[in-house]
Image 1 (cartoon, helix red, strand yellow):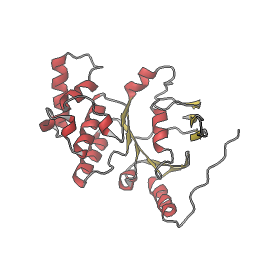
Image 2 (cartoon, one colour):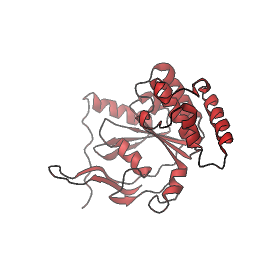
Image 3 (tube, one colour):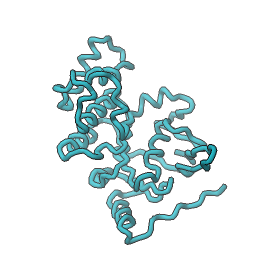
Length: 240
């Protein structure tokens, strides 16, 4: 990200608002966590990286590719796991949803079905193949959605709160799937245990990356601020 900025335009009765202040950051590590309170810009930063939120300044490069010039090339490299997986599962059955993720590959229908079933079996979800996507538990929905993301063989997985509201068993399964995936991981999370396993963390507050470095140090600082032991970081004003 090079001075990447995201704003909401003014509308009748609503003032313009900056959701992500000019941000410069380069992400190279295999596992990176975004931490911070709700509404501070973690999801906006991820969506800007994935070209899902339009930039109002600066630019983003993904593996050296500018999404504004080659959106298809970026989509091939990024897999986005949304916080609301109900909106991500759009086909009638589990296996059909995973098959949809495989349509970009040079496969016929029979090959796609076989590949989708193999991917589900690898995640211990084979028994759900013919189940309606509307008849899944929260944990099952998250795992099926993640299987569909991984089916595209992305170089990066961007996961927005992947363990939120999951029980212990399904949290473990989701974390294991993310950990063993060949793709690099950028995860926005309130799960500080998950964040602590990453190589690097970025603390996002008030639409800005206020700290960047060792996860243990940033988590400790974030907890201290959340508990009122230290003040919240003040946003640095950028030159106009």
